[in-house]
Amino acid sequence: MLKKFSNLRISFTVLLFVLLLFSGCGNRFIQFGGKVTDSDGQPYTKGSVIFTNEKVSARGKLQSDGTYKLESLKKGDGLAPGKYQVSLSGHHETIGSIAVSDIDDKYESASTSGLSCEVTKGGRFDFTVELKKK
Image 1 (cartoon, helix red, strand yellow):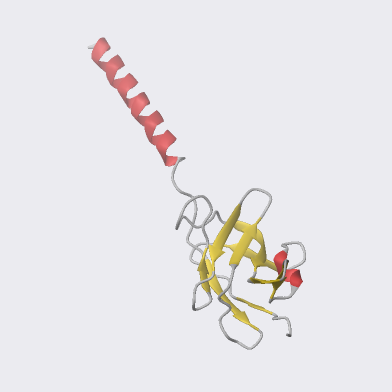
Image 2 (image 1 turned 180 degrees about the vertical axis):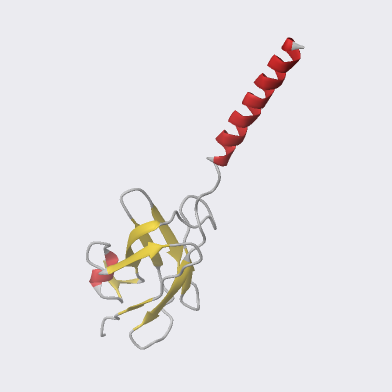
């Protein structure tokens, strides 16, 4: 009887360890996205939105309606909750051998964009970019 109890205890301990191990390995990313519009209120559809912090970054390609969904490690995974700096990789037109963006240069860097966001479950982040005058 003591041997059965000992085996049961070992089995329970192993089961508990496995459950704890796998509960910590779940996807802690959440779905997050938003919409980018230009200074005229029209959807901005060129480029990608980038969220970065000291630990991770995520990118979302802009769609034809100006929306984006963030991805960190694989398609559709989202990103971890937290505070992020936001930048935009805009459309670059090549004129000769020079790439020219159609958005204000400040948006191209998280340190100068002036955009930040706290990512929470079920949230979204919409913002407007200023277009360069041609």
